[in-house]
Image (tube, rainbow, N blue to C red; front, side):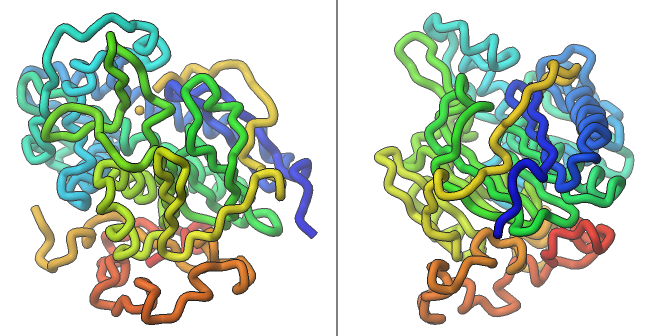
Length: 412
């Protein structure tokens, strides 16, 4: 018997221009957990917001090419963003800020989307992540004059990772943090795991109250959905969205309207799902090669799954615990060199979920597509240790390896 959603503490608030849903396996821990989440989101916003004039990132973007010292938190966010760019061969590029500004995304999204006049400037290709000079030891960064960093692709996911692992470690209960579709679970989950509803065609207005059309179960680790519907807007006759092709400065024209990926961390899941939108038809094979469970949805609603992602389950068939069930007042937050081996992911946080963290892992074999696949047809089954991106990662570079055992995502 699955536990009732009533046995889980739940709270939803505005954050980062979207919503933040917090779940705790112990309802008594909810208030303290929410206070910790609010504090964490406030710190990330103060470091990484592109729009706040008092934010660290704003100072970096307006330094006119001068080097700027940064806090350990912004240094971590920059490391994550540049690692994501390296891993995806520059597809997920933090230097797309000017591109977004030219497209009208030059202020908080809720405000920006209200401006619908035609654009007056041409698109601006990104200068490229290699133009960023970052010294992680000195915590100092320099971007070319006129370049604008936007950490939205990774900072929100990093906030989910940081918040969930910190809260779980401090309170000793299971925690799920959902920041507008960037999800991280940590600590001991409730019996049966966390049921997560995925809505792949929801616009900005329905984001927080949307009902998932597909349900999966996760026990720990990260889950992220990237798509072209939620952060979309119109300028003149052009319909735009926030996932930018760095080489053109224009929104990606992808065959997918949404991609969901499960991975060891929310950062890894978000990086992969964003890159999958950009890689379009090539994405499914790329995700399968990485053995990342993923669900890709075409514009006509057709679904492609890879690496053992479970078959679609209607949301009505089972409770969905990350569905917002209550509101709270708005908080003060408001967001967003190649290694020596031939493995481009060797310095990236571990990609893959171990079996207990895979949405398909606890499915009966009869319901699990991967379980029914012959080994010769299963990309993960054919992968040797030398081909496994996570297997070749030095322990010192793997955040999961450094976590207390109770909070590891189970991926090494």
